[in-house]
Amino acid sequence: MKRLSAFAKVDIIEVADKKAPENMSGAEMLEVKRKEGEHILFRTSQDTYVMPLEINGKMLSSEQLAAKMDELATYGKSKIAFVIARGTFPQIVEK
Image (cartoon, rainbow, N blue to C red):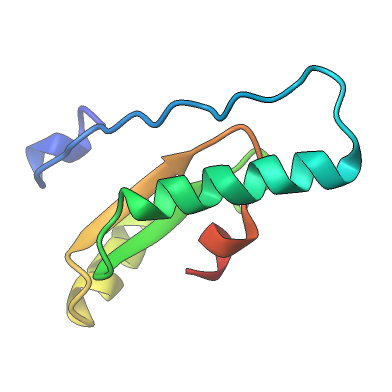
């Protein structure tokens, strides 16, 4: 973020994890993730491009990231939210 802030306005917003029991069923885990994903999206505006940073996600080089950001700017997406979370949120990946 330090390098990026030289070229763009950078805001860091932390969203607290939702409280969840230690031993959850698969369905309970999905519900917690759904609620967390909704909360994250609530904190971003409709005109924001959301880019999730996931452990199993696609790795981009600095050049690829710069090209992606340039492409987004070309199409009027000047706001980008990098989301770092403890899991994958389907509604974030779709946005």
